[in-house]
Length: 161
Image (cartoon, rainbow, N blue to C red; front, side):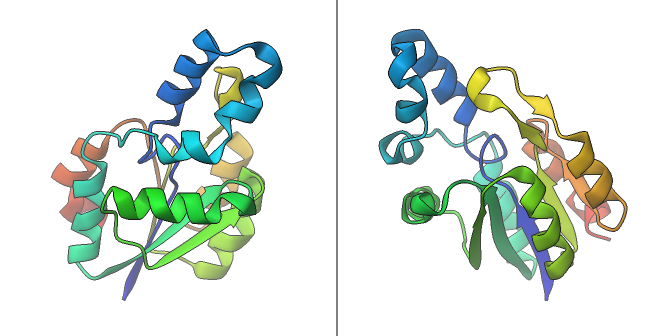
């Protein structure tokens, strides 16, 4: 069976929209607490075509492993959000930070990884994690997600050869 490792925040869930909205209406002293709360996570919007894209992999015999940089205490909220939005879940792995994804990916050796490869979202100025990208691209097939599920769907056969 083929394996897809997929990120969640800003890859299938619109975390940035939530953070921007909160930033504009939440006092600074409680912004981070509210932004990274279970209630907020459960209300993230789904990015366009992401459900269809992930299901396309699932329907073509891919195991779906979700790999996200979230605190372990959000595992149930994360699983609930995925289920609520009808995403297939074969496995869910949470790590503390994006750099910790590297070891997990190297152990899994997936066929494809889809990840936005950003950090620093809470400051509303996401930075591309070039160290993560270099480490992953060296040995794996990485699609850097840039709001392109429609492109992934249209190019599925080329991506998965």
